[in-house]
Structures are given as C-alpha cells and as structure tokens.
Amino acid sequence: MKAMLLEHAGQPLRLVERTTPAPGPRQIRLHVEACAVCRTDLHVVDGDLPNPKLPLIPGHEIVGIADLVGSDVDSSMLGHRFGVPWLGRTCGNCCYCRAGRENLCNSPVLTGYTADGGFATHVLADVDYAFELDRRDNPVAQAPLLCAGLIGWRCLKKAGDAKRLGLFGFGAAAHIIAQVSVWQGRQVFAFTKPGDVTAQELARQLGCIWAGSSEDRPPAELDAAIIFAPVGSLVPAALALVRKGGRVVCGGIHMSDIPAMHYELLWGERELVSVANLTRRDGDEFFAIAKQAKVTARTTVYPLHKANDALEDLRSGRVSGAAVLVP
Image (cartoon, rainbow, N blue to C red; front, side, top):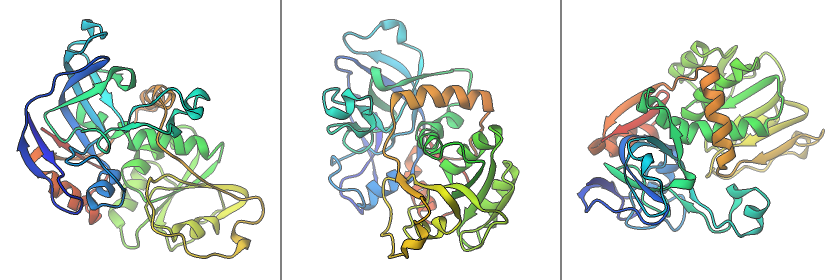
C-alpha cells in the first residue's frame, strides 16, 4: 500500500510503500476512498501534541470500503462503506468508560495519533468504533463529517439551546455545524480572521445572519459561542460578547495560551467549557441529523501525494471549507 508517513514531528510527510496490513480480531481493513485533513493532523505533524506514535500515518476523517475482515467480524460487512473517526478504541474499563463518557477514556486508541490513520490507500479500524455510511453518498463530502462534523456536533450540544450562536474560526467544523444550527432555527454569527472575506462570504451563503472579523462586535448579544480556532485570545473576546448566563465552548484539542483577563468577563454566571474527543453516541446522533439537515461539506480535493500541500494550505488559512485527500 502507499502512505504518507510522519517520521519526526516538524518534518514533511514522506510518500512510502508498505506491506498492506491484515486485520486482527474485531478489525476491518478499509480501502480508503477519501480522508479529510483536520487541524488536529496539523497539530500532530507540527509537534503541538505530545508523544504521537512514530513513525505515523496521520489522518482520522476516513471513508473507505471494507475489503478484508478479521476474526469475529461478520464477512457480510465486506463491500460496505465505513467511516473511521479520531476515537479508534477505548478501554471499556476505566471510570469514564463505565459512566458512558468514553470520550474521556484514560487509555484510548486515537486514529492518526496513537495508531496509523488514513493518509494511505488502506487502513485498519476497530469494527466497533467505525460508522457504517451510505454508499450512495459522495465519500469526499462524507469525510469531513468524521471529525469536523462530529466535534462540531458535540460542541453544539454543549452550547445548549442558544438561539443566538457565535462561531469563531469559520473553517471545516464551523461551516458544517453552521448548517445544522441554521436548520435548527438558530441565528448564527460567524467570526473569521480579520480580512478573510472568503470565509465570511461562505458563512453568509450557508445562512449565517452576520459574518465579520473576530475583532468586530456583532449586532446582537450572543447566548453562546463556540471557538474552533486554536487562538487563546479568542476566549476573552467571546466571553465579552456572551450574555449573562451564557456559555463559551472551546472545541479544539490544542489552543495557544489564554491571556490574563478581568474576572468581570466571566462573572454573571457565564461558563467556559471544553470539548474532548467524541463518543459513538455522538456519531449515531450526528449522522442522522446531518441527513435531515442536508448538510453539504465544501471541499478542496488533493491527491494523496500532495498531503504536505494540503497541510500547508490549512496552516496558512488558504482552505475554504475542508481539505480532503483522495488516494
């Protein structure tokens, strides 16, 4: 098989030929159709996240067709399409798993971080943590739903019943969850990097009632805000725009330092919370909602060997919507 391999953090990925792996117990092997490129992949490659498995094949927004199954897996799954997310497996025994909070598992397997991912022609996945997908849909459009969509959905649930919702960082996750929010009848306010008129125009096309810079003040007070951009200074900025009793949700796995801020920004029973990983229940909920809301991911396609270009475009803010690798 072919794969883009990370050998050392901070270095470009290298295209390699590897023996195509065989699945073990409770595993399926997928022939990869598409793998979206997530900002988390960027954090892994750049060394922002500690202790990745090295060498490593990144990628955790994977769509593919099962072409081989391991023991204890029904062979009728062959030929079916599956999606593989960030959460590749959990221990099932820690206090979090036993409480139904598997996203906080103490010993998880994380796709494209502690296990090889989907920047390749083939990938192994735990059948119990893979989502069966509709083969009638476009795999390129499905791929961003596996993380940008799922994390966006978990963030949206954390935001509660907010009628006026702010989204900071209008990239892959925000452009998907904005569609769900508009479908739910919320008023969505999109905040982008100063001068990013492309993202602001996309936000308006997707039904946001206002789009502007993260330095601008929207025309209404927010009930809640979700921060997808990994920029710590957005935390006090978002708190300053949220009403008393409102909530700010931090949706990223990594963020630059949050600057010192006046307690007044948090006072008034405002809440600041984070989102970590996802659960399989999130997936079951979100894929059904995405169908009903007719969510469509905006994508830019790159061939597998151009993975470094996709990462650089994401790093530089040149991707509108989501970048997707197609082997």
